[in-house]
Image 1: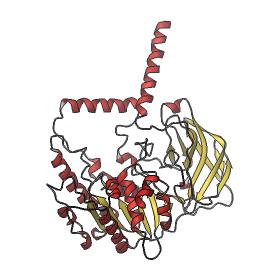
Image 2: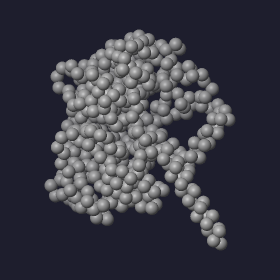
Image 3: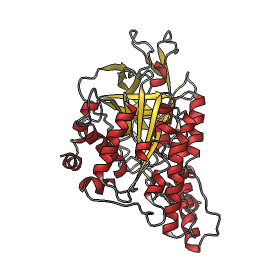
Image 4: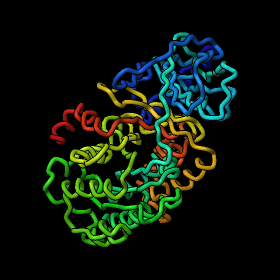
Length: 461
């Protein structure tokens, strides 16, 4: 009997260890840590005392569309080490935010739904419920006034086809927007048929993705003449920035010319295209886009939070293009798609809120935070727009080779063992959330933000 119990205990221990090991593929940051959102300038935090059921709002607060983050110390329960813990607003449907397994330390809870116009503030009690997690009594509430966006003209800069939909569909659908994609995305070939040659896969990816970048924004009301793709080489922006006069070519140039792809643009100034392009060309065309769109807001990747080089250097290019900008600088809304060590960000199912990206960055990351809430109809529209992109589809109907089948089986087994859903990095889970999270920086401060990173400061200089 004792031997059988020992076997069961040992088996459970091995299973839990394997489950934790596989989970680390999708969340590699330490679960015991302090998340810090370093803001520039003076920012007011309201001290609060939480109990087991929530807290009372200060009497002077009103619902005016503010973004609200609760800085609180959390500790996952024993079960919270093996399943994702969460905190939800119990009296507001669909307001739940997930944390990583074993989460311990300071975190930010997105409370923005409380402060949306039309929300009653008569009941000052905010009721919280924790799933496999508890919190410390001391907390602070950070309130960020809603940016004065109104009906402002918006320019979205997307490094690749589909980034605009993933990060900003909700924003660009509600404004007079331009959507400009920087690269052709020809290296996004992972879901194309395995029996195609590398050259054919690159050509097909470029053809599909450039076309999508010019058409899918129409699902959010952006007319074709305000969509553009600059058709720069995918994955090359960092190298281009280091050698701004050196010419680069698309990976598919020999079979599908850049000039053919550029001819799909309806913006006359962006229809012609040489086979060779440079970083200096990119700077000039971003200046052109700024002149054509006259945006009050530019939406682009966060150069310190987003790890993808093309994302980082898209924003570096914007900062360079704005150096000699006449007139007032636009407000910059920075988004994050790829987090270092957390390919599954944002956590939780598609109906859960997006929170602040996990981790701590040295230096300031923004002036303010804006959690843009999406009405259910707009959230559904965003889901359909993301689902229409090449990145969410599979075209391979051929029988895979044995090694491919084995690799897929191992990956599937690993995912199941970790307790994650079938596709932890899939954009249909990560993107169409009830909110979009932006980090707001004044346009004339963007260069200073970028200059905090030594590599980026060198490129700017």
